[in-house]
Length: 199
Image (cartoon, rainbow, N blue to C red; front, side, top):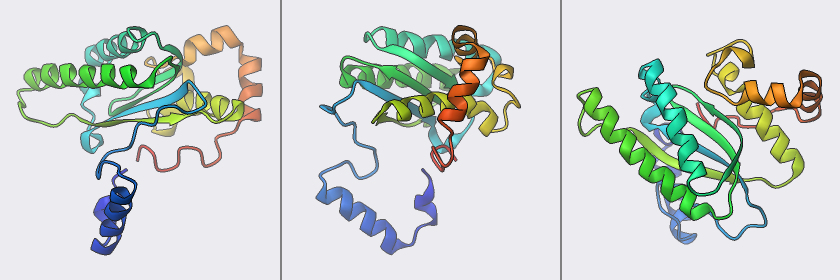
């Protein structure tokens, strides 16, 4: 996500030219619609990956409720989620991606205003866009479930899924059963899935 700083000027110009040719925003991911799926991995990240969400336990708890409400208000069904101090992932089925992205944009705006006021940092940029990845297959879906539930472990916030309170892993293990969850983990391994996404 932040490879831009490490690129040469020539690499930057090439990337910008490619986005111009594809008629895409120069510095933001496109939100594709009309794909043969209604299932998406939605990711939101704090600007510069600063741990703004994780400034306090109360902020983390409140943000989880706010994210869930943003999805529910657009009739999206959440399958898996994880909120970390500086980003979040949600795997959901949505009847229409555009209203969901708009709802998350409003959420980010409200949270930025509230957090910047609380932190006495008016004008601070809190968010770096929202991205969506369409699920291409059943394997992609289940690997994404594993990725989301493993995210707190991947980033060193916990040594086991169940140690992280801001995740659907607890409900998933209870509803799926640990034996079945272990079979799904083995059948749909992460391998290089998500490499570099939230570094």
